[in-house]
Length: 294
Length: 275
Image (cartoon, rainbow over all chains, first blue to last red; front, top):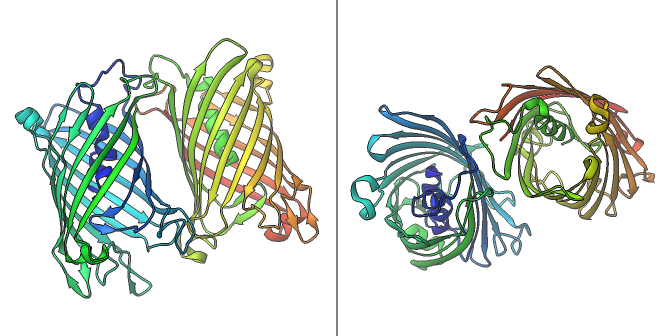
């Protein structure tokens, strides 16, 4: 699930993606683990007022719903330089009631369906490196399929800083196969050229007995052609800060560990993303949902 | 999907030594998944595609809500997704997109004494590449696992009644009602499981609408499915298997007119996981 923390720029993806880590902290009651094997299932269902993909608006009206499922496979665990090796497979979906969903031209709810696979290496000092391939498809035909390879370098500095840890990371993502039938498409910005995306972020947080709070901060930028507007690639895509609260529903049971979560995210948009957002440079996103880890 | 069901059921037979101390999953959630490849896809006898390669990735999460010794022995919920990816006319070559079908389903299953079970399933059949209009359906399945009294001679009969709520599999004029009678006798040959599922698909009302109105007989099929587990006991990564089979399907007039042939031989193989 670590890889998912960087795939979506919206607040709830952090919720969905990082929930396993939050729920898995010692602060929460670990009554018993019904699943001590190498496979971990994580799922969530979230509701949002707005869906912004890396700052790029995806809907103007209605609500978005995000069902997501991830299967994590811990393929290796050791004490050498390579501490862990894991594979994640999952699907992430966005269902829209508004203009890009059931109320839009297609009349269909299912706006986005992503499939992804990631390979994650865990090293000493809490450092990890993850490579993720993602296929972003639109079942209701709202956009052409985007294929992407993403690299994420992250450091879990909890061991050094405890509650003061900021868990920094950097992501570089490259759109692939953006030329189809002689036309350039398959891009998040709908631009002329396949783009390369850069994201810096951190997710400081605090885990208590009854709830966890995290404050993810991130900045999304274009390394090349990721935020194209009228032939101009604008470097700054967005800045985001959010406040997220996760409340576990009891401890870990035979049905896994469940939680409810909610949050508020503020995004400050760049020139391209502001234009996509109807000229509005500021965007607030509210979300809540249900998640579980097994 | 019939083969998938067979593979799933075989993956949970006692052959697999489930419930041993080696089982890494002792809780109430079970994950079943697989990836199959086949040469033709007929949905309840209705031809979908027999060109190119057809791939079926699927996953199912089973949740045991209740397990007891009373008249109601088990209560379970299943949530899952089944997909069909086509390289041929119903996919890449014909519609420009691979993803022909994506089904979401949820089932409430009640298990009674003597191996009898009743399942109610809601399914939404969607086509991401717009190969067909979405279909929403509710189905009821009454099944009997007669392995207890009959041992290896068990036939595991079942009956399914499905009612279309919105959209139609036959693209006809009225939502239809489907009836399926089937059985899935199986035997274990050492670690290898062999099943011989039989299915008869009928229209109770408007399910196989054609040029001559609603046709009663949709299809009959018989298959041989072999499942070979990777290991004799579950591992930390669950129980994996490879499976494959051959299915012979004979069609009613309506489905024959679409396929252009009275019968079809379907060959498939795949990999499965139960965790």
